[in-house]
Length: 166
Image 1 (cartoon, rainbow, N blue to C red):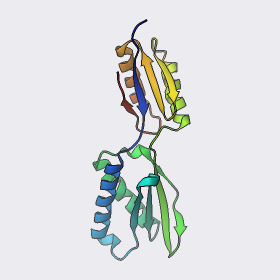
Image 2 (cartoon, one colour; image 1 turned 90 degrees about the vertical axis):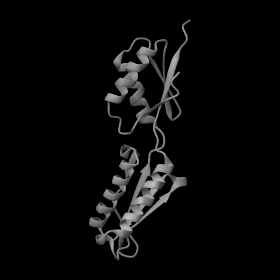
Image 3 (cartoon, rainbow, N blue to C red; image 1 turned 90 degrees about the horizontal axis):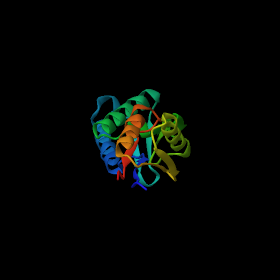
Image 4 (cartoon, rainbow, N blue to C red; image 1 turned 30 degrees about the vertical axis):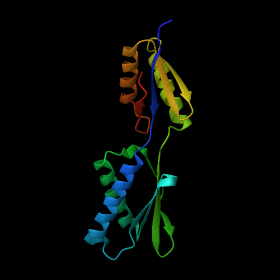
């Protein structure tokens, strides 16, 4: 039997880069004129993979989110992996918004990735869901390259990472 080659499809963000982007955004809002005297704040909870934004009103919340997203984009953190929550009223006449970071493929996305590979009917390419990742295997490395190109061309709602290519 021929040797099987494979790669893993995962997702996630570099938490250190997120931390750096949050620090840069905090510095910018401390300097900006439109945030002077406001209660605007960005709180990064690394253990929970969560960013909590606090602002005086929805206008400042939009501006705060724009600053954060700009800093994340500059640091090559995929903005697709942000799960931006609703603006909710908070204490002290402020509003809050929680931004969750998608660190792993959820089961629905993993099923969509596996289904996309099966629907493409690539020769001898198989996809298997293994927890929070999808392992794609084939005897031909060329077919695996086609599978990667196929997955990159589709939108699954998260930034896909391809690793463990062997």
